[in-house]
Length: 228
Ligand SMILES: [Mg+2]
Image 1 (cartoon, rainbow, N blue to C red):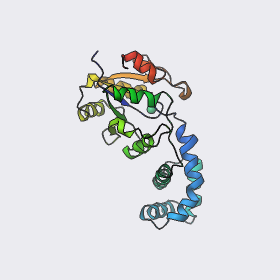
Image 2: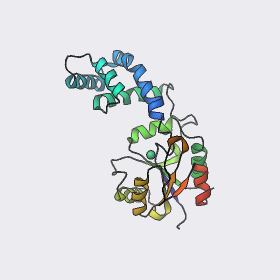
Image 3: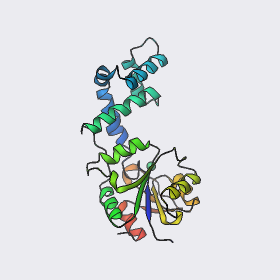
Image 4: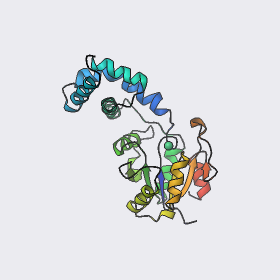
């Protein structure tokens, strides 16, 4: 096995509880939606989202439509746009913090100090990734990362995506260790020649893979791969 030179990490189920979105982000947006619309309705991005909401549900007050969509957890573009704006403001105002498993920030700092190249690969946008790691309870962790990658680079279950990320980080695939909770993503990374380790977080109910190394937290990843 090649010595590890870089670590590429997934977010949900790996660095952050899967429940963070439902437990924190969604309620935060819901309680602020009415006031946010009242304050920002003339701003172009907000006005466009409200117009789109009215188009999708004619004859109904956009706020009622949006609250209904949130109750149903509907994946609708104007709702997602408004939620994103509310979260961005909340992070900037210090009213919203992301959540990392307690073993994550210490390990990232150790790995970075030890000279490893760190990067993030998530289906959430690069902008959302930067907000999440920039507003952690442990502080702004974005300076630790050499790269952020989302599905603009490719799908998470396709091997080509991982080859492209290794090249972008200027690392041989075999020296890059990919951390994720999802077996299909780990399979794709392995097919591209990356080293893999599955995070099996009890709180997330992850089922352990038989094809990949597994670890319960980032400290266990360090032990398994001989990292400091
Ligand atoms: Mg995940």
